[in-house]
Each structure stands twice: as C-alpha cells, then as structure tokens.
Image (tube, helix red, strand yellow):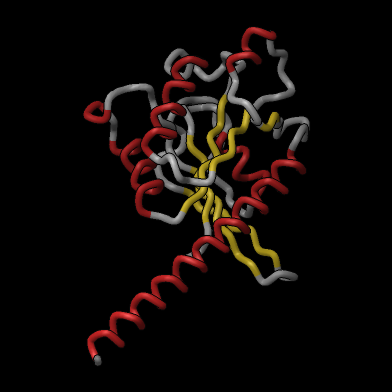
Length: 194
C-alpha cells in the first residue's frame, strides 16, 4: 500500500494546480467546474529515503446530500473510504470558484468530511493566496491552514514539506498496522496449533 494524500474540496478551487505543483501528476487545469472527472495520480519519489508517495486529484464535491451526488463525487468518496489516504482539503476563499463553491458551501463540505473521516491525517490548504482577502473571510478559515498560491509560489515549499511529513507519518502508521496485523495472524495460528 502506497501512502497517499487525496486532495478534496469544492469544484474549481485549485486542487489540480496544487497536484501539479507538489507531484509528478499532470491533471487538466481549466477555469470551469468539474474539470477533473476522475482520480488523477501524481507521485512523489524520495530516492534518498527510498520512499514513494501518491498524491490524488479528485473531482470536486458540492454541498449537497449524499443521494444527490453525481458519479464523479462518489468517486472522490470512494478514494477516501477505500484507500490509505491522508486528506488535503483545499479552500478557495476568493469568490472566483463559482456560485456552487461559495466559502460557506466549501466549509460545509469540509465539516461533513471531517465528521465522516475523523481519524484521517488532515491538512487544510487555502489556495489562491496571492489574491486579496478580507479579515472577515480570514476569520472563517480553519485554524492552522496553509496559505498557498501556485501562481506566485507563495507557501509552496512549506506545503511540500507538510505533504512529505504527513505522508511519512502515514507510511509509519501503515507499517505499524501491517506489523500488528501480521502479529495477530501469527498469534491466531499459534492458538489453533495449541
């Protein structure tokens, strides 16, 4: 299992641009919602530490009930539910992401995901950080968020470091889970022999 970070958020918030900036992934980038129609994988390879990570670009999620989600949104949920992923939640507070991706709608999606996946390693990223932002908007953003701009390069080095440390931590957790599972399997086999 390759430790992975899935980028999630509303449509048109900059997930694909961030995937391009931090990994080998080359998802399509356009200025309209649901440019991303599937999961696009980028890789981060650290030859010195002999580590390999995946970064997944996923289709945008709208603030709506589960029964109203389209197939692309369901794919995003499936990647979170069935893969060993950390989460990078991308927020665009600029107001330029479209009427279905208002800041409040994005924060609602974030709250729903945090509730549904409470134990996932989590990083909040505010994109388009080179654009002006009022204090009232800043006050609504999650505590501890990283402010980045792919366009200007703002915060990208810090983001790469956070991605690396988060995925390194996830790799250690996955290794420990595998060792624990193997240990439990050995204990069960021994019990059967006794």
